[in-house]
Image (cartoon, rainbow, N blue to C red; front, side, top):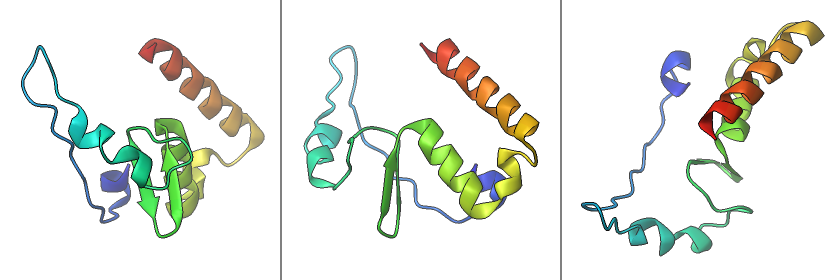
Length: 92
């Protein structure tokens, strides 16, 4: 979304090493120290705003940088939410 909106951002990767015994310690060792209400990946830090969960992050970015991405009408917003719920279901 940042690329689409042409917004600069910093990507912070966490190494998990080689499988099948992936080592998640690069994330698990720091996640509780970062000040997130619900520490999880992905996360977004924007000044004092700290958000985790993909949908929360996407809606935050849309609202901040181009609110029209959230729809111009109640019907648009309903369709967007419907699509978001469908994508979440597919991810499960």
